[in-house]
Length: 283
Image (cartoon, rainbow, N blue to C red; front, side):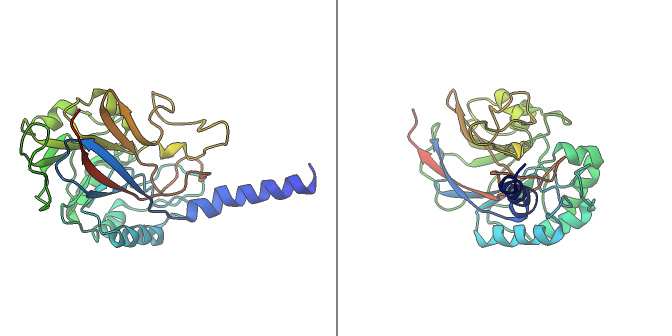
């Protein structure tokens, strides 16, 4: 291997193992949802924090909280995998320490969480208790009505009604009982589903305006002309990242901020995604 090849390899390694994992982005995505009544609702999506992975300790978490608050979202959702298990070069951080920092998050419509597979592998009840002790409700197969934001449209697709937030437990480790999560949501109400793993999406009925998930990390590595070789999903890269529409149903998969297994990110930088939900015409 020549000097040029060695130099390129070193630069790519520095980028993928240090510079990109240490970075933080807050991109915004506009998502149009037919008949959605809370026009312009801004949702901050925090997922796969994996606090303790390399270049992603408690100081980085404090940056994430500060950057999220600077975006002034209406609603904040935390989609699980707060902790790490087995990432190369990582350092375990107690969930209580993580939750204490997340407790500084505030939003007019609230801050809500679901748990991920790593949280279950540690102790689901412990992680949930830590979040709830810091004022963050954990929605495991249950739903809550969001407070009125003062800018609802007069009508949604089935008439005037509120917006609900339903949390579905993890696809790998939880009951992922979609029917139970939606059972208390009144007919005619718009509902957003939050869950850790997007593999739940095929079971989500058309009445749900939007499903928001994480888990995949966007594959962590995106290779030009190849794509994402490894995505932890039963569906391959089908639900890897971004806004996905299937049969009129909407899913957004956020790529998160931490790393798992290998402490690498390449062309999939750490992101706190800001979603602007816009009501569109009913088809």
